[in-house]
Image (cartoon, rainbow, N blue to C red):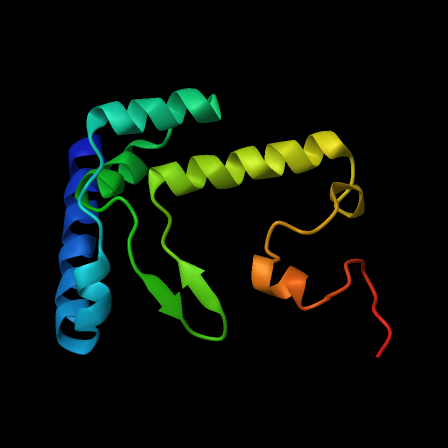
Amino acid sequence: MNKSNRMDTVEALWRQIETWLSIHAPHAWHMLRPGASQWEIQEAEVALGSMLPEHFKASCRIHDGGYIIDLVTEMNIFSLKDIVAEWQMFQELDEVGTWSDAGIPYYFTEHVTRSGWQTGPIQPV
């Protein structure tokens, strides 16, 4: 499959996703972000230190992240900015050495921390 066909496929897939969302989940459809600019894509590649695949960049040009999927847990379709932030967070954790050395886990919200939740791999019941 050549580059042009892959880009057409990405556009066709997004049209299908948008159509389905507009019918079955209009709230999610309205939350899709506009596409990323070429500058935003290049900025993310510099921050990540890696070139992004062409089909991924094509997808980002259509929608740069957006809605939250709430299935078993809440999942977010990240924007390029969110992807870079997550990558940097994992880089920082890697530099610390271990997850337990990092203190309060990144996913602990202020509310969870204030409620007295204890950190660590196993907690008494």
